[in-house]
Amino acid sequence: MRFSIYRYDPDVDAKPYLRDYDIALEPTDRMLLDALVRIKAEDDTFSFRRSCREGVCGSDAMNINGKNGLACITRLIELREPVVIRPLPGLPVIRDLVVDMSQFFKQYHSVKPYLVNDTQPPEKERLQSPEDREELDGLYECILCACCSASCPSFWWNPDKFVGPAGLLQAYRFIADTRDQATNDRLDNLEDPYRLFRCHSIMNCVDVCPKGLNPTRAIGKIKELLVKRSV
Amino acid sequence: MVRREVVGAHYGLRDWLAQRMTAVVMIVYTLLFLIVLASRLPLDYGDWKALWALPVMRYATALFVFSLLVHAWVGVREIFMDYIKPIGLRLTLYGVVILALVLYGLWSVEILWGM
Image 1 (cartoon, each protein chain N blue to C red):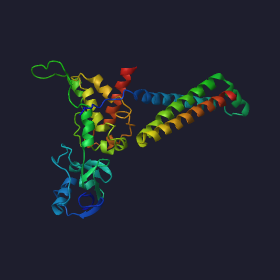
Image 2 (cartoon, chains in turn cyan, yellow):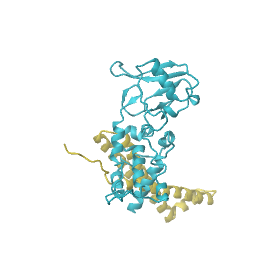
Image 3 (cartoon, rainbow over the protein chains, first blue to last red):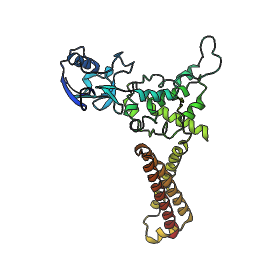
Image 4 (cartoon, rainbow over the protein chains, first blue to last red):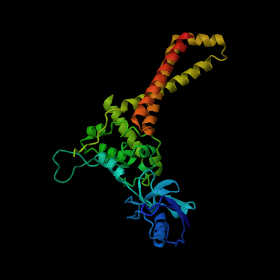
């Protein structure tokens, strides 16, 4: 199978280039990650991140034939050749497919992605009704692979100011949590022309999310709460 | 080192909401205007003149133009915020756009009430 892969080693290369690989696949090679591992075995200068190899850790997010996705759950059989693999767009490249995610995680941390509740915790755990728990479905599953934020033009242009779809989905995950008491602070934190309102609902995030989540809907819910709070 | 915490600027909602509300006004006006036109076909110069002599037509159109200007301001400002990074250039462009929009508004009033 033919691959065209983005290669860049800042210590050696003056600028990035695409390198072609022809790889003989085995019948057991079903996902793109299997092919990348074979390429790595052939050319050990090639770098990429990977860990769980089953779509849970979010390490091997990359741009596959122009669309962000996880290599480990992208079927080889569905890819058109030559398969063009590039690093996630909009993030600084460290080497080959390895990108610097600091800005992404900085935005994630800025929404305080943890439960805020100052009341005395009960002996066992803070309980929720099944209905309240259902509110978190479609939010808690995010694995922070950055496929969504790296496909969002608003995040490309203002990664230092716009929280991005992943961060905003996480922000809403805690706003929607009935055990959390900081809803007002969270809304204050987001009410900003850059942090929240850079989202123009173009839904690239929904298109690429490998977990099938919908950050645009979560962002819409945040805006709805802001409206309810102020009118 | 001072540990700065990122917090919202506490605005942005009003602009976002205004853009949605003005969009609704424009849709409603456009539909009503098309219905009014369709109900008066065939239209000659006299009918057209009589139509615009109605105060309701003038005020409704003025409201439409006002909505359009607000909508355009929010939208154009968003584009500048996305792409124009130097503050001086951005503020200059803001000024130019505001001036243009205000002039369009005044011009529309002159047309509506000058007919």
